Amino acid sequence: MKNNIKVQRAIHDLTQADLAKKIGVSRQTINAMEKNKYVPSTVLSLKIAKLFKKPVEDIFFLEDED
Image: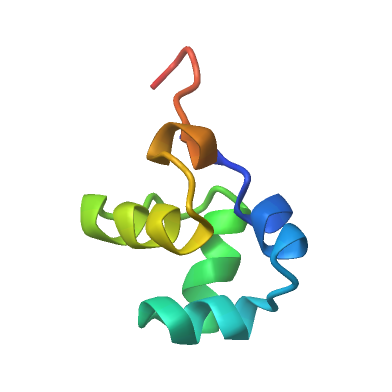
């Protein structure tokens, strides 16, 4: 699963640490998600989408092999 968290952070002028604090995870978790090394839980995905005021599908998307 891919995502555009990094783009959304830039639009909202947030650092990885800022986003992590707002959704209750570590900065390393945000980094891993942005590098597609960690697939977030449904709850975490929904928190991110709510923070960015976007549908989940606008932030996370499946690849053909998913």
